[in-house]
Image (cartoon, rainbow, N blue to C red; front, side, top):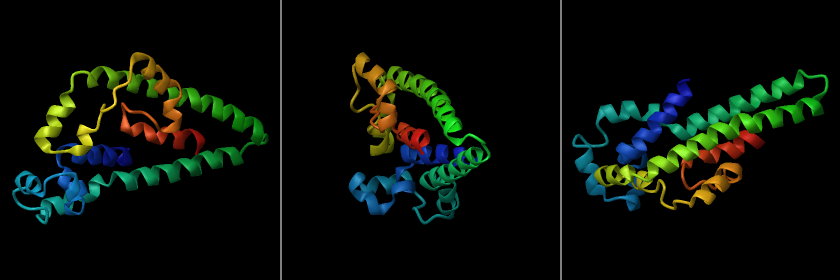
Length: 170
């Protein structure tokens, strides 16, 4: 639960406070003057210092992967027939991951057609948010992404889908 909240905060910061995530080191992503206007107190203000650790999404994802690996490994080690349990777990896992991914991609496809993210990205100067739905597939391409692209990390509709190949094969 806590790791999920951290990832959500990270995505919020990327979209609405990009300077907080990318800082001056990534000035090539956006105009540094925009950072000054978006954060009138400056990035060294204590509030940003206090909020930043709660938005470290990459770290939260790494911790989640480690925890997931430990739990999955332990469940296999407790089995008498490891190969059979592994086959069963992979088949079950595929459908448990594939259905929510397909729903998320259809949802992103439908919402992306309104281009609201582009309006918000221009207001916040978030190149990260502007990239969403940048290569909108055809309806047939959507089906291909839902069935196969998810497992190769090639989704153009939902950038969080990259984790699915790790979660399935990891």
